[in-house]
Structure formats: structure tokens, C-alpha cells
Image (tube, rainbow, N blue to C red; front, side, top):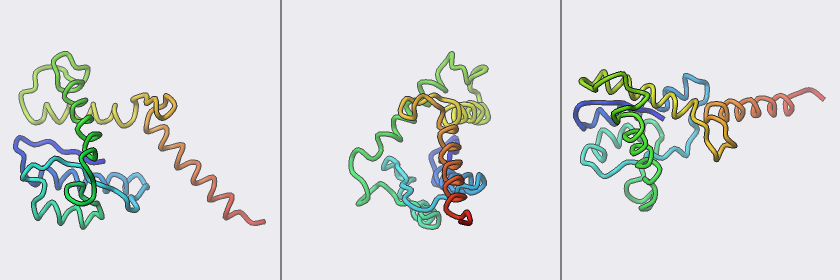
Length: 152
């Protein structure tokens, strides 16, 4: 849901992304109403007190520990691998030259996340992009609400 890039792996790298995700959903009018789980590796910066506090404040469960099992992080790790293989590699359509600074990485990241979340055709969604599927989902909810609330 959220993302952030930094030159070092510190707690703010994670907490910024954790706060960004729910903020983006709220901004789009689709508030997260529970059931959100944060998948992470066990790096020392991730189980910090600040990270745990941010997760709690945002109502996000942590998958490290009792919530999940060994397979919880497969999707997250697959997504990270996809980013490395498709966005950062030489010859990537998201790159315009060498990655010399964090700004260059941010530019590549922004293009890849936009494509991955909004334009990528996904077979499990019937060959449509995730953004289109989500728009249809919320349109269906609105239509259903109008039917339920319509005077008889």
C-alpha cells in the first residue's frame, strides 16, 4: 500500500511507508477498515518499538510472530523480486539512465509502482488492471447502496 526509498535501512524507511499506505487509501476515499497485515522480513529495523507503534496506530497487524506462518511473506518477497528484476535492472523501461542517486531510484520506483498497481494486466482479475478492478468494485458498492437505500 505504501512505499518509501532510502539509502539506509532504518526504522523511518518502514514507518514512512506504513503511514503512507493508509493515507493514500483515505485520500482516494477508500479507508482501510481492518484486516490489513504488514509482511516483512525479520531485519532489525522492522521489529523496532517505533515500527510496532506505527503499526498499532494505523491498525495494521504484523506478520512477524504469532499472526502468520512461513508463507506470509512470499507475496511481499515476490513483489520485491519483481521490482529488482523489472524496474532496477539495466535496460528497464522504467530507467532513463544510470541510478546515481536516491532521486533516480525514487523516479524508477514511482513509475514501476504506478504500472504495477494501475496498468498491469492481471490474469487473476480477468486480464484487467488492478486499478480498473478496484474502480469496478467501488462502483458496484455504490450501485448496491443506492438500491438498498432507494425509496420503495
